[in-house]
Image (cartoon, rainbow, N blue to C red; front, side):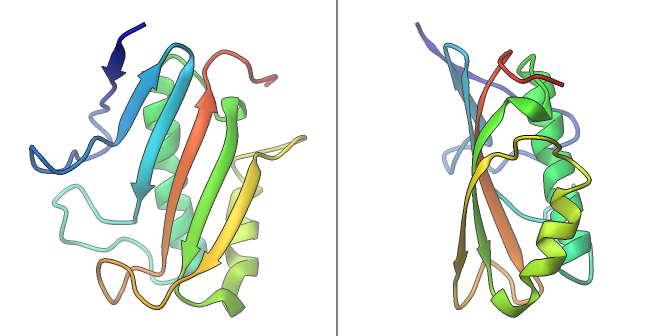
Length: 133
């Protein structure tokens, strides 16, 4: 089965030769680490972890839907934060996107992300068509 690149008009793609936001192999969608950068790729949307998590999960939702799936298809998230003491804000936002069986998840504190105002980055794996809601 060939690898298929999936794009969404709601998620800005990186410049050619850097990375793909979403690749699908069979029914598995692999999402790159996404941040709260705006469509201009310069503006940072959201002033805290809660707001940035919502922006990022909206991007994941747009990509998984472009691949033919839904949020309940996500089976794994890896979350990078710069301020782990504010992780409760991440969990609060996640509850707005997932229900019942949440994806498996890893939370890692890092010293920096791509911009000082970016507090969170999330990558994910979804099995398209296997979610329950």
